[in-house]
Length: 286
Ligand code: NAP
Image (cartoon, rainbow, N blue to C red; front, side, top):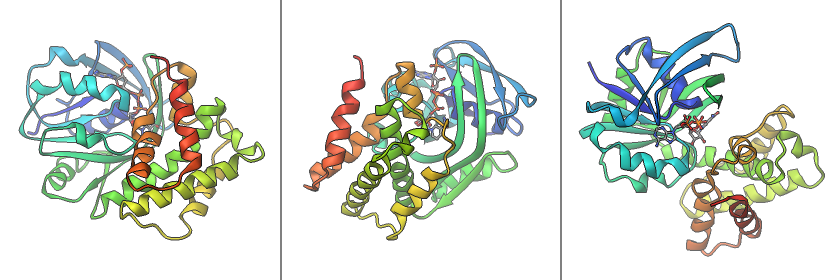
């Protein structure tokens, strides 16, 4: 049987672990330290599970599938600490938001997953809200992964256009994460006069950057994303909002920073992004 490990016992990693444990009881959920997690599925405190987290440094066995579900600023440390877990043929799935992180890997079989799993970790409790989906590039390795997890609750969607899926999620995250983090207010900040217009302008710039990278969307993508934002409950936070109010490092370099650098390479005029990005950087404490 294929050996599977997940690094990052947070909202995403724990959900994937719960999904896969039913069919892969040997799966290891690896974290920084030993921990017993209480996990609630589907935003329901009656659906309680217990999850054991094993310290990454104590595991010696190599695995065939390694899923990494840490936040972007935590990836460098994981890359230093995970080498003993992989062999030449290990399939590594990076279950993260953002773009550009694959360039940090030397391994030949690393795939960016576009994650549609919603949840929140607080202390040793994980509340899963909804969804169990990860989108991956369609290739031999990911088809094998698809087969390995068949029968579990994890939905693996394979696509021939992973760039499209990554960029779409990147754009959805771009504006709402920026305005909620900078204002330190959840989605209700969209009701403040001018904020929706700010989101729209940021998305116009993001779509232009995507186009310069040969990723083309339909004309109505910006309206579609703004409609998604309109559907957010007022009290819903974003990951960057929760990170900023908790004093955690922000995933700026994979989202706004990635786009900022691409805009410079393509010599695009992106005044809103050029303002948002340093303002976000200024929120980070070293
Ligand atoms: P999270 O809840 O903060 O979980 C990250 C986990 O990684 C934490 O448990 C953390 O440990 C652990 N970790 C950090 N450094 C580690 C290390 N060196 N070794 C082992 N474990 C380490 O993050 P998340 O919400 O699951 O997000 C993961 C990725 O998915 C992010 O890119 C996020 O943007 C993306 N995403 C999240 C959601 C969502 O709804 N949560 C939705 C879509 C995409 P500690 O517990 O010790 O801090």
